[in-house]
Image (tube, rainbow, N blue to C red; front, side, top):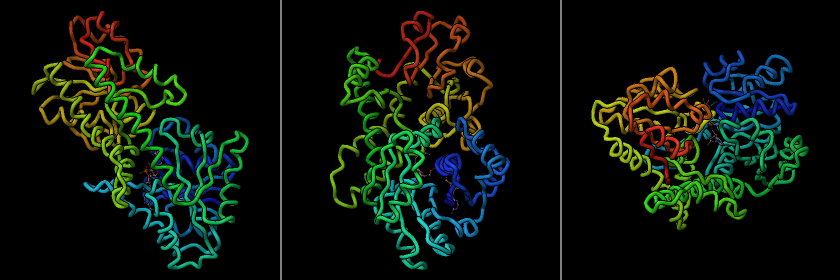
Length: 433
Ligand SMILES: NC(=O)c1ccc[n+]([C@@H]2O[C@H](COP(=O)([O-])OP(=O)(O)OC[C@H]3O[C@@H](n4cnc5c(N)ncnc54)[C@H](O)[C@@H]3O)[C@@H](O)[C@H]2O)c1
């Protein structure tokens, strides 16, 4: 089977490399020539554990993987074409910006030469895959292609494992032929007995948004309970543990923190709300999740400023800039949002992140990047642990406190034991503890 993947971001590149690992001849296309040049040298344009080994293996040894900037050339012989371009939020409105998807659909329709399956893997609002079909129909007879919805659930930081061992694969199809073909594609996953959820196209599109929105809801919920716990002397980690042991609830996504960020949850929640609005459906639960999360960063930053008495000209440290550990993705990162607010108040920001500093600096020139956590904490009035990278879990805190009694530390991800830090002389503030 020949596969073509259009868009070599996190989803496209990981999918392409993993499909090559399954044994499929795969070409990955991107309009970004620099990206293609880098990939052709087995260099991944972003940090993702394990990806460069896969690239090297399938680009240079098995030759199952190739990269191209020519969509026209790359779709001609494809049996299955995946659309994996970005679907960011439109400014202000919160709707998904589908312009990249429409652009790719138009180009596919002008260039396919034989029957193929066109699969939307990007996260797209309900109705999009059928609209892609309408665009293709402008040039291609309906017998010569089918469309399928196949949303992706991988997580940055563990993307390869998530792709190779997913909890489920969701496919939305219109007919037997396309369903058989896409099931055949995922046959290698039968070995792990991966459930394949086969539905209509609309259901498949909704499953993706409902899943992300539900996880975001869990996060906003536990964050509100954290706020209450903080006020009444309860401990949110114990609360979450006591809740999460209940199998009906589950312990995942019950970690209190600065709110959800990243390239998916914020935009997907907003897009889902907008879809409901268009159909006049009451989505008040998700509205509350979204607006609480939007407020959370400024509330946490106010707490940081007042507890540590930060004033213009003071220095604060941020440890962790990526939106979560094991990625260099800073899209909608809560650490960067906190840094921006502090910067507008004239506070200097020293920071350190194992991987995300170059990306963070691109749009935030005000950040002072440091070589390690200790350099970042030097001469600082407040230390903010924004991302729970493993290397922040075992810092030599004696080196940081350095006789400065009552240095404030804001452990936004609750990775330290409050008592131990207080005994060392820190003024410790967790989230919901
Ligand atoms: N990042 C994740 O963890 C994740 C997980 C699940 C689903 N998704 C969804 O997958 C989709 C892609 O996300 P991403 O994070 O991989 O995006 P990304 O922004 O990292 O990458 C998108 C890529 O598409 C390329 N592109 C845009 N238009 C193109 C065109 N006309 N031709 C060729 N290439 C083109 C861009 O140059 C870019 O390299 C989104 O809808 C997202 O919501 C993302």
